[in-house]
Length: 114
Length: 114
Image 1 (cartoon, rainbow over the protein chains, first blue to last red):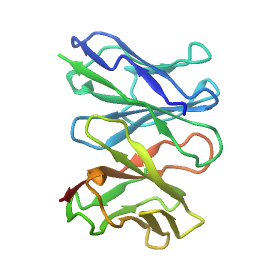
Image 2: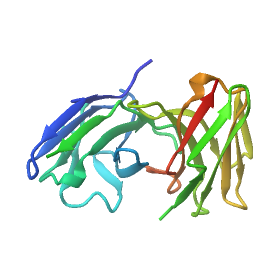
Image 3: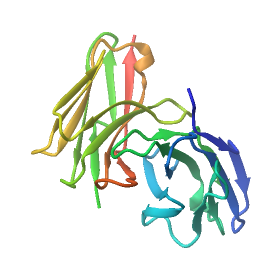
Image 4: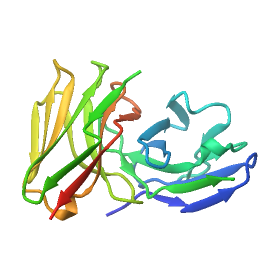
């Protein structure tokens, strides 16, 4: 069964550095998402992406964040200048495309900002 | 925006007993309500979902009920087993159609006592 994949599984960075988190959604899926989960807390929506543009973003997704689908398979989340509070698990998700259909989550990237 | 409340935060039940987790949502436009199970360090995995045009859905030992008028939905697990131990998150879709990010509850840590 196809799965969403993410790389790297762990990333450690210094405050102020840029990071790029990568995701490969399930191949026939059209809608893509990023969520984050601070340790011990709930999963929080960041952004959704469809047809090469952002469909919706939360208040967490400020100017420091950007997303891109650079080719037909990858979906990336860039954090331009990381802060300590960006430390979290970042999950990518995708869904096929019909209204209200299941979102499948990737295994996550654990980001630690020092 | 949507707000999802979930309780209890921790639930301990004896193996073989039933477990019930409850969620309420604020936005009457929400129309999709998935439940995810997350084991320690793993990705959230969908276990069951319900759409607003039905009041109940069952899949083996797991059932979900939805009361649109009261804006609450519940997860019921019967004949609990040790492998049911995990954190369970309810969620609601923010808007109809298109790309819709999920708003999650804070999670319930379900502990199955042998």
